[in-house]
Length: 303
Image: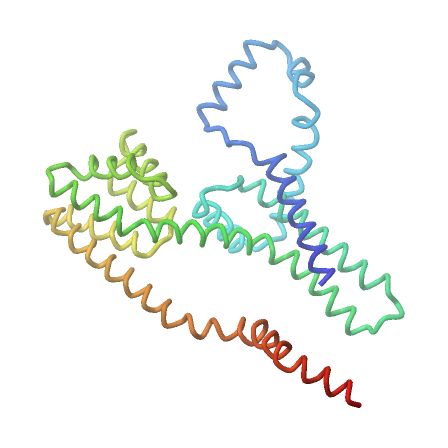
């Protein structure tokens, strides 16, 4: 238990440090170019530019970025691609390079403590040392990705919860005479949460000249929710086939409400089974202690 608390404390420390050092807002390509031109006009030589930058930006942050780049070379390409997708689906809580640095530091610290535990206790039972040391190393390898998966699932859960009501509002707006883009904009303005943010980002892409079909497909890829992807596919097919958008929206809205009711019913059926474990582990022992405790005391006093 102490080992788990130590590993979790190290994980939290590394996470906060990585976010504080590397987790600043990513600049766009246009912003970085504008900043480079400003630096060129302000400073004539590279020496003055380097001296103006703080030690944190000149040495510490590039060193941490180098650790992440080195660690990315030993990871499989499938893992790196999956990390990139999960970062996008989680809403980019940190940049890709920052997460790799955070991943490398967490795994390196757990590897160090695992090897230290194996070497520092020669008198202990060897299989126990191997199991505990290997468990620490495995925690360091699994914990950062588990944290990222948790962020993705949390965001998807919020979007899935808000999707039926948002689609009902879109359907009402379209049936009232608004266009699809105007209805999406109304939902994005009147609602809050990850779904509203993703809709706003999609509408911004459309206003900048991207086709609505492409922007909606990118929205589905960013979110990764199956129900939303089904809705986007239905809208794209309706536009290609010339079917009325209002009718398609009405059908999709009914399907999402039905799916939400089925999920609620499934969770209600699973609740008694999930309640067995806390009952057996926590409530029944307390009942036994309260009921049998006085009898055990009297029997012990009699003898």
